Amino acid sequence: MSSQPLVLLNGEWRASAGSTTFQAVNPRTGESLPGVYPLSPWSEVQAMIQAAAQAFELVRAWPGSRFAAFLEDYATRIEAAAPELVAMAHAETGLPVEPRLSKAELPRTTNQLRQAARAAREGSWLRPVIDTAANIRSVHAPLGPVVVFGPNNFPFAFNGMAGGDFAAAVAAGCPVIAKGHSSHPGTTRLFAELALAASVATGMPPGFVQVVYRLDHADGEKLVSHPLVGAIGYTGARETGLVLKAAADRVGKPIYVELSSINPVVILPGALAERRVALADEYVSSVLMGTGQFCTNPGLLLMYASDASRTFVTTLAEKFAAAPVGTLLSAGVLRHLESSVATIQSAGARPLCGGTRASGSATSHANTLFLADGKTFLTRPQELQTEAFGNVALVVLVEDDETMARILASLEGNLTGTIYSAADGSDDDAYGRIEPALRQCVGRLLNDKMPTGVAVSPAMNHGGPFPATGHPGFTAVGLPAAILRFTKLDCYDAVRENRLPPALRNENPGGVWRSIDGVWTTGNVGA
Image (cartoon, rainbow, N blue to C red; front, side):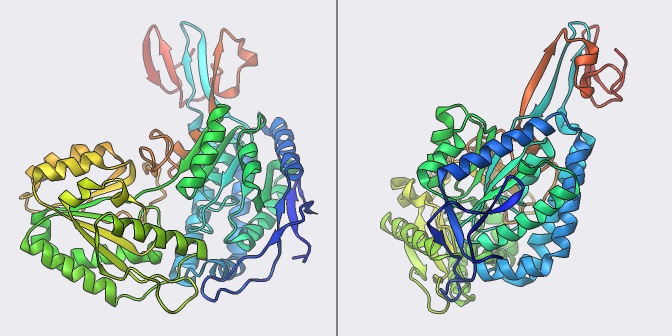
């Protein structure tokens, strides 16, 4: 790469007009990495928006097969460049090469791209509906250029230039402006080079994929509220996400934000009696996986107070203290984690281990386990639900059913909620009391498994009530549902047959809802 800061703008790598630059930092050593990246001025960002809008005018009526071809070509190029991508992401994030980056996250990324390609080709996300009696028809259509903000903790699977939001937007037929995360600009740059090559090879217009590495906060607000931007996908910190959401909301722009989640886990007494040792290992492994830097990290554990649960907590603390301490993604993550730890402790939780920085890499924090009782939690529920993004968890020992009900009612919206119960059915009554309240505040409810993994399945919901996400009806993972975020519903009333989109014409081969004499059915049943 040239030492001169470059941006991908309208199909070309161009020298940035910005005068401010930055470098990625190796979080294990604290040393700056090679490669200089620009802070783009507004004029540059505006040129990207214009280029994306021009690209959209060209592709908006293209069949899904065109976008599928791009996504498949891109996935193949990523696999060929895997060693370089893995080495770069490892240097920029400190995440382990194996199994995390090479065996798990990169294959998941190419799998997502290929799933998006299949969805684009088959067109199930279009959801055409035909009312033949009234001659009214509707279908989903691409919304326009999409801006994707990627997070720091998934340099591949959620990268603005390759992750799930990118794949879903492209499958819908939307050009993408990727906002690369400042923690791994080199990884984003490699993806952008591959995406540009795939774009050229499959005949996409120049402005279909573009990347900006960093921009002024005020310009970020202008970007998400620009008239030519169709929608925004954002995964990251709550504070920044809320600022962008407010800017987009002011002008009515759809913005899908994933912001914060502590993913409560409830272990009922029967489950604890049945498999105490296995549960301790499962919980510790899930909390400390990836140094706790998962949006599905189970940061809150609820149990009924008893001698058995107190013994279990002692075991957890011993395992936390004995486990290796991992590297956090950046100095900024470490500062935020220390602030969260201070908030949780000042609200009345007692640290059983950790609570301070750790020696070793430049960005390490000791594995930390807090303990509080249910009544203490209810005195400061907001502070004790602070997301500690890292290797930190809070255990709450709950005195009785009434306290448990009040705690569950106080929980914010979360991505996931988990209940462990006895296999012999002895916890079923308690499960019946707890499940409705937990179900109401989570997007994905789990039984007897930790929530850390997010399968790329059509049935997956990676979403939930605020502040887990900005809208409880949509998911960031799972196709074709994730595609709908970047679409609009087009209705055609008495429009002539030859003027309709192909999916709404009478000769459509199937997959549509049709009404014949007021009876709705699916498939090709004639006009």
